[in-house]
Amino acid sequence: MNLTRSAIKVFTAKGASSLIGFLGIAFFARELASDQMGSLFLFQALLGIIAIPANFGINNAVTKRFSEGESPESILSTAILLKGLLLLPFVAGIVLFQGAINNYLGDDLALLLIPALILQESAKLTIQVLKGELRVGETAAPSFFRSLVYICVGAILVWSGRGVRGIIYGLFAGFVVMLVWGMWKSSTTVGLPSLGHARSLFNYSKYAFISSVGGYFYSWVDIAIIGLFLAQSDVGVYEIAWRVTAVVMLFSSSIATTIFPQVSQWDAEGVTKRIESLLPEAIAVALFIAIPAFFGVVLFSRDILGLTFGTEYTAASLVLIILTGEKVIQSIHVILGRSLQAIDRPDLAAKAGVISISLNLVLNVVLVLSYGIVGAAVATAFSFIINSILHAYYLSKFVSIRIPYIRIGGCVAASFGMAIVLYIVESAIQISSLPMLLLTIGFGITVYVGFALIIPPSRGVILDNMRRAVD
Image (cartoon, rainbow, N blue to C red; front, side, top):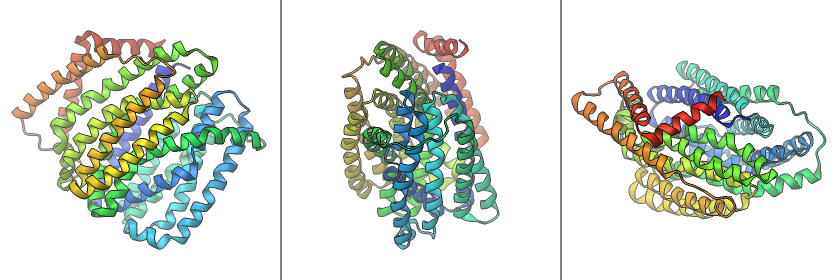
């Protein structure tokens, strides 16, 4: 498997999906009030939180066991059975507590969580199977078309007056496309379930579950707590800022997705040196994008939110800066975290997750009550820094982690040069429209790449990966 080529495929699909998603969210935000957007985001947050125990880490366990070469047919059927059993109590709980859920969401949406949960978990399982088959690049297309169908169907229904429900119906349609595509592409058929494979999956998933709690917590716990203590409009404003920062994670998450099955295979074969040589290259590439994004957001946070989504969303400009800085750290963490799980030590990833989750929860409650949505951003950023440090410490016990400081320094220097040029441009012209903002951002990207090609360490990041892509 060509890791660079697979990462580019995944990144291209994720980039296109994020662009479509970004345009869709911008359209939804302009068509619906911020409190309606808050109801949508709370629905998605609750869906993500329920999915944590409903999946119990089974999806990650499937990828791990597939990549190790165990009986894939039996693993798949066992995983389907386990996931079905896990879903039942949550479906029953949603039905029983639908009144309280509707009050929390601010709309009559509770029962829609049931088909959303079933479709989401089924679709994600097919993608994990493809990853386990070491066909990571082929997960790009179904992920892209899921986003495309979701936004297109949602936009049509919102435009026709269906409101938040229309967006959720679009979500259903996207999951159906992803599910069908994944089943079509997978070469693994369903075999007989096995108690032995159930134990094998559970032995991995019980730790992967805690790690996934950490991931979902950082995605949704701040939204859930803001929904408890603040207004739904605050939820909408905060989540819009979060969605913008998600763009920063595109390439690093693509790299982490790509290297997981390969690192798992190398670990099973005992070739630790190959893992150690891969990690610094992966980190350098991830930060090549994350670092300049932070500099750009510091300069244009109010313009990005106000011109794209509306003036009411500029209240989250400081939140956007804080969360983008956090994404720089997360770009390293996602690679170290997936590598730690790939070497079959999800227990250590789980320990780091428990510590940071507890810290995140306490800080969110305290800081949201004291400082509102800015407090939520600070809580998330600080707890994630701790989480990243712990993951690096645990991984370093098994493989040597070499941080590519020189290449990172080159990226920082190129980003600083870009920021100076953009500051001069911003001082000379008034950015008063979205097209002008997009042109300025495009110009900034060009300037950054130009500086990166001039500075030897950052030039090495570009040229080395270009060579790998064409090999």
